[in-house]
Amino acid sequence: MERPYDVITFDCYGTLIDWESGIAGAFLSAAREDGIEFGRDEVLRAYEIEEPLVEGEQFRFYRDVLTETAARVARSRGWPLAFERATFLVNSLPSWKPFPDTNAALERLSAAGYRLGILSNVDDDLLAATRRHFTVSFDPIVTAQQVRSYKPAHGHWIEARKRIGDARWLHAAQSNFHDVVPANALGIATAWVNRRGDAQRPGGTPLHEVRDMAGLADLLA
Image (tube, rainbow, N blue to C red; front, side, top):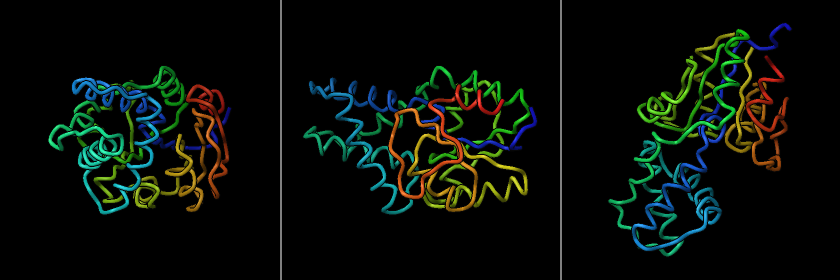
């Protein structure tokens, strides 16, 4: 089968890495140390509200985004968390694991000849810690730290295009809001890895839609 693309870039957290389990686990563990119990869904809903607000206020390094978001989520749930303890989320990030299908799918795509990259709302050092969980290499790697903005702003794709050149490019991601909508707006082909069965946003119709990374490998490898 002839490859339809030369390069596939991925969002990392939520697409390749099970960040919901990582975030929820870190919150529930830290809260229990203070004798407080939360539900997993309660924490994740609050996190999804707060993080985009923090990212949109001004550019912060992602470790500071995580800390500020953790503090706001705690406050919104009535947990009197001291700000200096809100670093628990940053500290947990290197331990967040790939989804069970991630590495096998990446290996299949790499073996099929695709160049693989990552466009992520994260700091360089945090992504370097995460990359130890992967069994393939990535190039290009574009982070929020490098472009000084967070998706859905266009900085990641503009920088990636400079590095990719005229190669045929597909961007694959779980978040319709952060990735599919802005990539579509820039004329970049998209694959929506819709792990949660989310509804599309306006402007978020992908060229391809799959349920997981295994489905993407089945489609392209």
